[in-house]
Length: 570
Ligand code: SAH
Ligand code: SF4
Ligand code: F3S
Image (cartoon, rainbow, N blue to C red; front, top):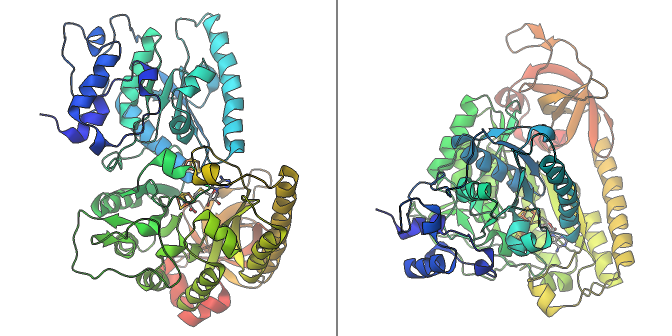
């Protein structure tokens, strides 16, 4: 009646300490060991009226409540989201699961019965913000306990990467926390929350080899938004020495193509105009449930991985082909990518499809081959620069984005200067720049010394930012006089101007006016419209312009031939 695959969903984490240091995958969990673990806890029988046997469930829902748990009102959930875009999409998955179980959502703190904090562990600073938020929530919880609403106690759940990293330590350190749920246990949330009704704490931080939430249709937190996120894969196998993600998100696994295409179609039907495909390394996507005859592509010269190359199945190029064909008027973006996985077939399809945005994320992390080696990135500065050249040749007018870290273990002044020169050589349209933050568990933590003083990291960080801004300003000024295709998102609150984004995800603003429509009429721009905008002013992070006419992706690119595209730099 139940399969082993589902067994991870029924493990009761009633005794958090029994799961200390537990980092399992569904495949590694034997039913026997599950039963043993069940025996270690207070016992499921304590929670099921009239039953002495564990109940194994195929579908997650609130399966059993302790005798003394009386949920007499609809519980309202308040979401706090920190971290990357995957966390935003994960929150939409969580909301879908909870909504299905009858929970309600509120955006007003005072109305909330449950606070769910979707957390990030990437740097110490990210966690510091969350501890700060928890201070506030603890106070809120206490005030409710002595208020006239004390019959509606507040519960606090910590989800995501920090939950996975700290596990039960979170509850030990912050007594106000009631639930800890890692990125692969969101299906279990209704049950975990039900357990808190009797004052228990509940923890599920099991990682899985196959959980992709493929069958959960995320409920968008902002229904009015013209853009949406779709997770196409989870986890990461790269093990860059500085990074905590492989430990918090587990092994890499891809969601089946068909479920992704169905979701894109569903969003297109709802009027969504832009989807961003999400994953830690979207370009190493593999749907191995679908076998193909195609030979495996080789990694570009100068790139290698720490894991065995995956074989067979549908790859990222196949996915891009299918996803971009759903609706030619829907913009397709993707993030994050790894430089190692950009074979020509991926570059080709990006170049050929007008609706795939030509902004490529090529996170360099450092410009020094020695630092890259210590980071275990699998490429040298030279191989990276060759790739940049190749990408620019294959996709005329392509934009590039990057992530850079300064102050990694042992980084000398000279090595840092190489990062600066790389940023100078490559014209990045977008860059995310970070000072290194040592994370426990990572290889760097075990092998290297975090020996660059904080003030040196700070100074290097400021220099990177200054260079990046200066270069962006120049790049953007060069756009003045060009016409960009802009997808309208809304208005700027302060100025009332119309706000949209160009293909490089750069903000473009303009004063509202009536402009020509495709059928010869005139009307103002509204969210979801594509508008051709002539760029008239530039700052480092926003362009200003004049709207010319309403258009579509197909019409806009029909008007400028391919070679024009690089000249117009769209
Ligand atoms: N998988 C993605 C994103 C990973 S996290 C990628 O590889 O691009 C986003 C970024 O955070 C990383 O690219 C890296 O630049 C940065 N980062 C990761 N660990 C860090 C650490 N310990 N200190 C500082 N920055 C870090
Ligand atoms: Fe972290 Fe590297 Fe994986 Fe990106 S590729 S998530 S930086 S381990
Ligand atoms: Fe943070 Fe986890 Fe994303 S550590 S950056 S929330 S994958």
